[in-house]
Image (cartoon, rainbow, N blue to C red; front, top):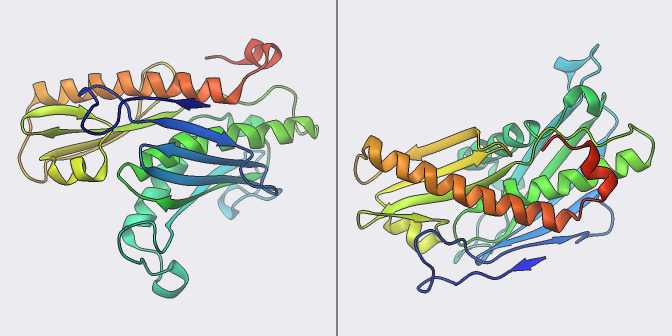
Length: 252
């Protein structure tokens, strides 16, 4: 599903960039989604394994985890592959964020003793790769749950929420939503916000790298991010094409 929005230079301060989710993008993964957010493109694949981490052994609880990587020419210069350079601190921090966010979407007891790994590979980076990974990762996760359900692992989808994420920042004293890389570089303050279906915060990351920010500015950023997350959530659920039977079992 493609949703058009004005692009950089034409967007209003509270408008999202173009956003699309192309499901079933690859053949083998239980969930595979190409998410496009502006000029950022991330391939999110969900893999189901009938095992759980050691710290969960002896429980009936499942687990959701994530890995994140920038492909070598996803930016204007070549990035070393992690197999040669080792995972960077930035990538480790981002994949932990994605995993934490997506675990909030699922009843892990209902998932059962299995692991779903969400791999987020950045094909092209133009700002907001972590929030795009959360948004596309959620869609891939739901498709993987459908595969499990159709295989008899459980009845209704063990979904507790829809999880969405967006960035915002302060540029020239004005708050702006869904920053691309040029805007991110110009921002004196930038935030990444993850929210659930009830407008509750799942994760907030914010910094005033160039200048401190006030409580009033923070409130404006949060209001703008929640508005963006609501719009993204609508597009996620539309892309997933929930059936009437599925909707009847969802709590959101």
